[in-house]
Amino acid sequence: MMDDGYANRLRRRRYREQRRREHMRRGAAMACIGGGLALCLCMVVAIPRRSATVASAAVADVRGCRASMAWPVADAHVVGAFDPPPQPWDPGHRGVDLAVELGGDLLAPADGIIAFSGTVAGKSVVTIRHGRLTSTFEPAQTTLPAGSRIGRGDRFATVAGESDHCGESCVHWGVRGGDERYLDPVGQTEARKIVLKPVTET
Image (cartoon, rainbow, N blue to C red; front, side, top):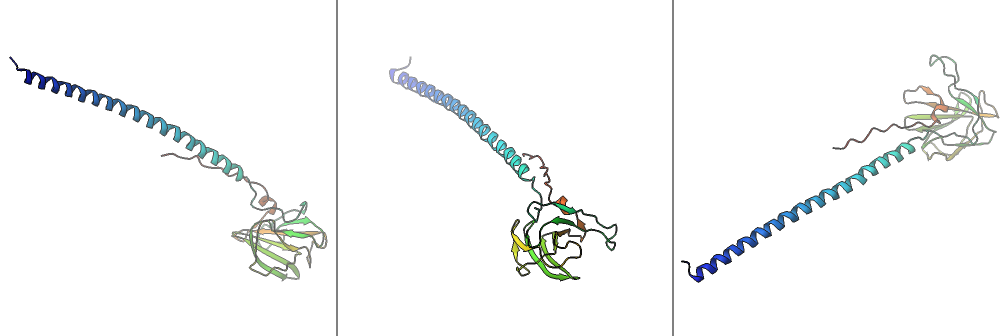
């Protein structure tokens, strides 16, 4: 037969053990609840981030529809079409003629640097370098020295001087690529849609 002291100690031990088990069960339950909340929060945060990525891509896609060049004259009207020669040494029309009055303003079709201004074979020429592309205008004259930086749409010259075919009613605009091949300026003024690759999430 157990004495009263031993019985009391046993009861207290069982009571502490029962409390410890209840505490552990409550802790496990709280951990599960916390983990579930964290998972839900991560899902909520992740969804807007992906939506924001898609939205940003859509905006970039719309903004990508911008022509690489702008027209160098106001109310542009082509009076002489691009007609490249079959061979570089053959005759042809290596640009377009745009209707404009003598003394009219010429606007930079894209950001660039004045590369040359002067007379070439009796023609008054101004050349702008836009990175991989080069624009040439004649008849044209400018007061800006070579090396001057200009922005898209900036007035950089006037229609003036000598030309071998435009005279007083037009300006010739030629565009040359990095490979020295002449390009159709009209094509450079047409917007091109940039196709974006889908975002791959890891």
